[in-house]
Length: 287
Ligand code: MN
Image 1 (tube, rainbow, N blue to C red):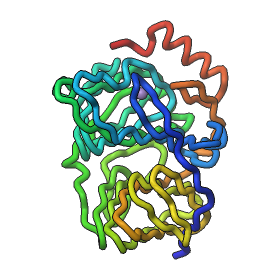
Image 2: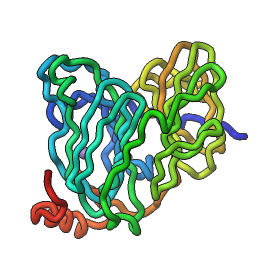
Image 3: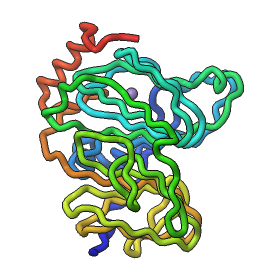
């Protein structure tokens, strides 16, 4: 197997979104315009590492109702709890080690807010939200969401660490999230001195994203909250000198035109206009 080198190191951009939620925007990263990131990271549109932070008691930091159209969100919770509600009548509780796959499809309104216990006592919160583009043929699909319980994607032991597979196949394990875009996505924790290697199809976009600690890919050190976009090859190989926690990200590019505005990702500016009209006319529903 030919290990992929680091093609580009893209530091995350500390920012805030929703209702005062501090996060690091990894895609698009610092210095990237959306269009650059869309091309480089296809089929991925956005990746946010929210927290780790400690909510003070009574803090209502979260994401109040807002619309989406034309893509999917995969929200993975590492610490804390989040309650989800959406305009299709869906609701669920995100727990550590669990995730939620939401298909915005033809349009949805949703919110992600702290649970009452969290509001009362405060406490830590941390997670990663990934936006996965939908191929044109799926942008009009029925909206909805799927809870992926922690039990459906348990930690599996790998040499020198453990892996939780959210989507696609890593380390011989297939994750529960199934998306029209072909992707492979996992959370990997490594002990000091560990090495990890895995085949990834040539031609797929691939990236290594440490959340904590530093990993080395082909001689290049990759710090926490940095996207290491990988070059050509058919394998991902990395090592960790100290303890590290990272997301492994791979996907087959969709290679379709992207028109993006705020919470909508379509193929043409006219479709973006249509998304605004749908939302304003209430055709995406409400909470
Ligand atoms: Mn959202």
